[in-house]
Image (cartoon, rainbow, N blue to C red; front, top):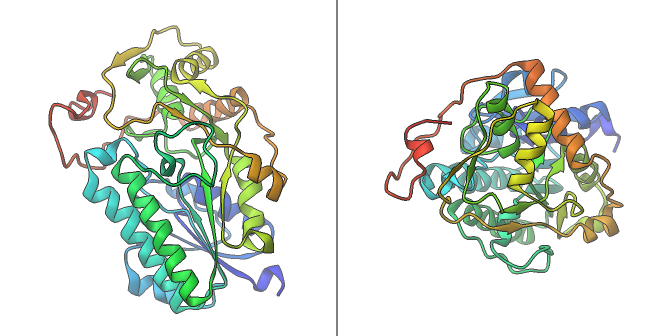
Amino acid sequence: MSKASKKILVTGVAGFLGSHLAEKLSELNYDVIGTDNMSGGYEDNVPKKIKFYNFDCCDLEKMNKIMKGVEIVYHCAATAHEGLSVFSPYEITKNNYLASVSVFTAAVNNKVKRIIFCSSMARYGNQKTPFTEDMKPKPVDPYAISKVASENVLINLCELNNIEWVIAVPHNIIGPRQKYDDPFRNVVSIMINRMLQKKAPIIYGDGKQKRCFSYIDDCLSCLIPMLDQKNLNKEIINIGPDEEFVTINKISEICSNITGSNLEPIYKKDRPREVKYASCSADKARKLLNYKTKTDLKNGILKTFQYIKKRGTRPFDYNISLEIKNELTPETWIKKEI
């Protein structure tokens, strides 16, 4: 089957990862369609050459209709709010787990060939780093639980209905098009948006939490081959670098150097259930996908900064309500101080 006749669905196509993925697939001459409910992305993220459907993935009836003729599904749509999920568990679970079940159900009904599900590093929890794919998932918050539950439903339905599946595990992706006015996630973009407004960065806890960050193009280099590479069926694969494992304090320092900010970070109390150390091994991706990190951390942050500066700073949009408010809820969220 030619690329032009291979129909691909990308969910979350107005979001950060989904928009880049759909654009790249379209450039490769695939027939790409996309969905988004516009809750976590920007309208101008949607690639102009694709067929766009504006509705929620939870709408199974509509999902069944647009899935007709689709051969490959990339399920990128998610409310990827790990910390917030502790205080808005209903909304986060609905938008991740139920939406995923809807997408997978429609895919089964329309007999797609392969589903690529973008899960999360949150699946590993507080285990020893670097996380490897053979580790048993140990989610510690509702977001991570919803992702692992979605993985289980995917495998269950695909095995029963003879559909190929791949689970991609990206982590802390940065780059242009990331939603930078979201007060609950995307630490690099939040810091840059604040610094450009002459505000100090906010850090929860002591800032010694450690993470690896992935530049968007490096993630795409792994996701694209997943659509038809035969030896990837039934594989779980971490995608992203493992070379630069840095603290949030270091991230703040790099952002300050790039933006020219000289404001000291504002430290707040720890967020409940936050994983202290999170880094994924890239060995499997290197073996199966010839993965190689091409954009290092500083250049990734620089490109993110250039995007936000060009687009213009924005006030933070508290578009998800806190369902639980108590002494554990970050005061910055309750008082909308970010």
